[in-house]
Length: 274
Image 1 (cartoon, one colour):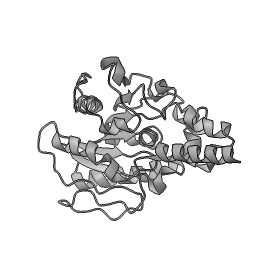
Image 2 (cartoon, one colour):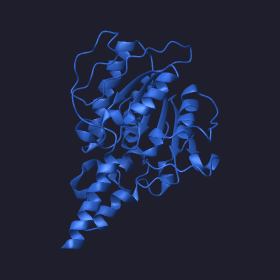
Image 3 (cartoon, helix red, strand yellow):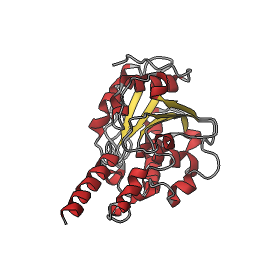
Image 4 (cartoon, one colour):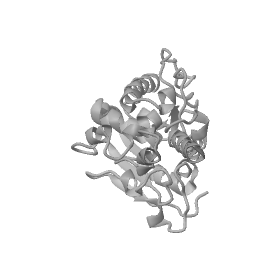
């Protein structure tokens, strides 16, 4: 009995971290300096007010992962803002616990809101963990490629993770009933559909970032994409850099990869970036 309770605690903790970065609530209006769109029920953190002023500046939506709040992505948003980009943070509906396809449909509406408010022809997406899957489903299955210029995933289980499968091994059933976790399990019907055909449809430039120390995406190479994507393993450039799953949002070296990807430049990570 004690073993089972311990297993349940571990499982729920694992699920909570897998969920980390994305909370529910009314979708905030994008930039307050512009006319705000009608409130949207999908969860999304209040986009920041900074208006990009440089020629290279882009409109960027940071897409949160399973079970986090917008504040968890503020360090990443602040870096993007400092580089002159106009930044919006999207929190997954229902903490990202539910059906990923439903989250992607809600996200599609949010992208439309952002484009309407900013006048941007295209936006760039930076998705962490589940957020990368939500974004990619939007691109591949919901016609999002015409609205997006760049896609960057950070530790997204593009081909699933054994961490999701292990809950069944612990006797807790299929992901303790968490639908998104079930969909991120290796071999799930959701991933089979998402990964059928081209991984990188449309004119979008795709970059997938991963780290050897990712404790939630195992094997770590399941965070890669095929069909012409730029796949970046942090330790291939910086062998001594230690970056965990959540650390991908905070790590300075990882951010230099994001910055290069958004600029359309060759990847040249700075191993000493803070």
